[in-house]
Amino acid sequence: MTIPPEPPPFPLEIVRSKRRKTASIRLVEGGGVRVTIPRHLPDRWEHDLLRRRSQWIRRQLALQSEVVPLKPKAYVEGARLTYLGRNYCLKRVHGAAVEARLRQGCLCISTPDGLTGAPLAVAIRGALERWYAARALAKLSEKTQRYAALLGVAAKSIAVRDYKSRWGSCSVSGDIRYNWRIIMSPQPIVDYVVVHELCHLLEHNHSARYWRHVEGVIADYRERRQWLKIHGNSLLF
Image (cartoon, rainbow, N blue to C red; front, side):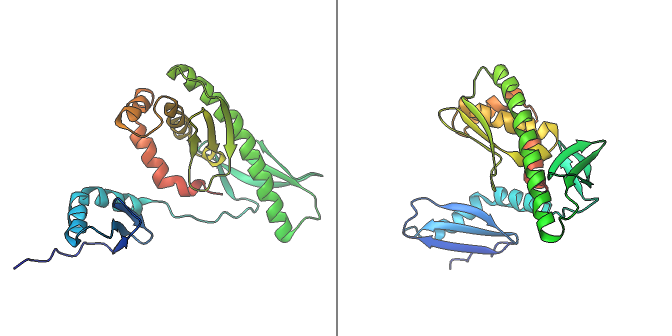
């Protein structure tokens, strides 16, 4: 008699697909796992896959439990915002134009006196985004040029974008784009993201050879990548 496998210690969803040619495993919200398998494969295949990837699944579930939950930011007087890993207090000051400046340990937002309510919140958010994006472009351009010289590569262009689910990208032609939000993280994390993208100019993949290039510059890249996975939500605007 065949003994059925024990149920996994986490919510599991098995999806059979006619269009998939290969199987995939990914985590879903709530600590569950979704396995997508080509429809033609036998049932035992899914159990074999889960058994082979059990250690990876446990590591990813443990990491997921450490992730800092996303908390909406309130753009009000006294709110704490981060820049290069340091906290700054949001302060509203009078001004004819809506703009942000860093002064004496505070992120100061100048706004007209008559601006209140929802329009005020929208204006403050817009001013902060423009300030962060400008700072990000300057700082990331500087770091990209410095690390590019170290790696013996050259970026064709550098820009910042409003990505929602990635920290950067590098095209085959050498155009590098960064998520401007990364400028909120500590300097070592910013450096890791820069080196990560530049190394794609040497290997346009995530092969073992690619990661050796990264490790040659950022010896503790695993710890920095882990930090970003855990704390990335706190950098969202």
